[in-house]
Length: 225
Image 1 (cartoon, helix red, strand yellow):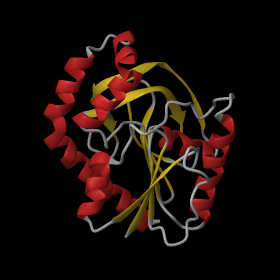
Image 2 (spheres, one colour; image 1 turned 90 degrees about the vertical axis):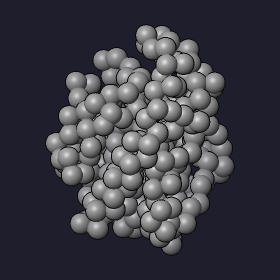
Image 3 (spheres, one colour; image 1 turned 180 degrees about the horizontal axis):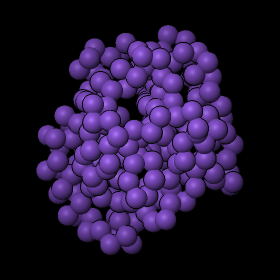
Image 4 (cartoon, helix red, strand yellow; image 1 turned 180 degrees about the vertical axis):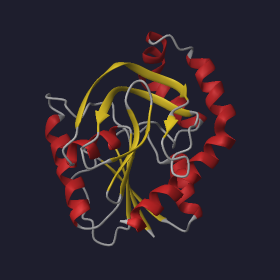
């Protein structure tokens, strides 16, 4: 199985999700977009993972060009029969690609959160790490899999799985985020960054298991389609 990871920042990696794919025999390639050049061709790719971004899908500034390119590329992935696991921004981009919309959330979600899973066999209720300020409204054809008071937390569209939370993040990755500006963002939302980091490290064994279950779900959804 060949898995292509699309990341948008040097601080990001597939982390625990990548480890779960590797445990199933996956071979990885990673592409930084847009800094690394055009998005790769999809020939020979069995699954795509799209990670988060600090931009919003609805950004109308300089980032709007590459965002539109990525959304169009996701449609091409669908046409080529390549399943996508979209995480945070990746989930929002999937929603936009298939007729949903993305908007600013009523408040930012930062921290460990339990969600209301509508299918515990596919989406464990968590806790999951949240770190975002937007929410996606899935397209009509999507199947809602989890939600909370902010909005959709997981949904599927055909062969694709989208999650608003961050199943990939361990303590090392969160520290990179905090050092890159996330500390101030967390503090603005009333979070103690050091406590959040300690919680994330303590959650790593359970997070690893939840990430593995989520990858199983992504593969199940892809096969069923």
